Picture 1 (cartoon, rainbow, N blue to C red):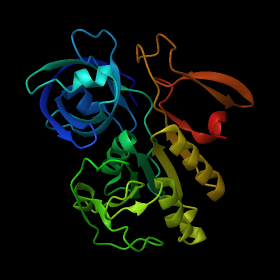
Picture 2 (picture 1 turned 30 degrees about the vertical axis):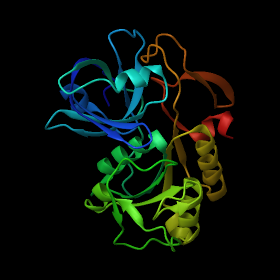
Picture 3 (picture 1 turned 180 degrees about the vertical axis):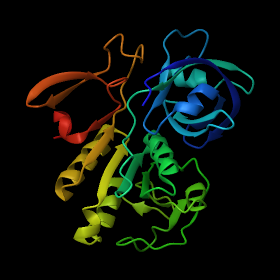
Picture 4 (picture 1 turned 90 degrees about the vertical axis):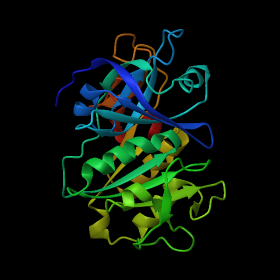
Length: 286
């Protein structure tokens, strides 16, 4: 696996606004599109006036067309400046950055749990697993989902009632997904997305459950719940951490996280040593 990070002048091809201050940005960035893997991110110069870049997870790539799709939420000055970028604009970009999810064991069933702007890495992982290994996406949001949705055509163990909506683009590729929300969104599980995943896992046979691996990205409270789910079910669990970053390429050590490896404390940089870590290495999530 190459650890090459490219600097590209990415061209804005599309910039779509969704409810809840969510935006989907499509960039022409052929080097990143060709090499990016699920769990990696890009570091964008959001505006010529802002020196510090912003890290954004990759949602999808099209290596043939050279495009990279990003989903982000405007929550601070930097991302609000990014919302002003228009089709044809050039955005200085570093990518792909970080250690991706390990999707190499095709005998496993990957349970992909994403919350808010942590959903994109799960969609990217599902895209890579299509036709190779079993996977299911559980996505949670407190604002309307920034995807086309439709009623699912398949039944999933343990999931009943009004939890009927799925993500159209995944359904069209034969990938199961279900949605969760505490905001009363129609067709969604009413509650937190880790609880939806727990309902599904609890309905599996012990043999089927033992095949599962949990992969997750989202807010820290959600990751704590996923780590607890993994411990309760005794399943391998991998978390993609979202941290504030300065350089984004490992030089400043501004995004370190404590790990316990072989009984010793270490400090790892989320940007290049992560963002994906095994949950059992992270004492914060123990």
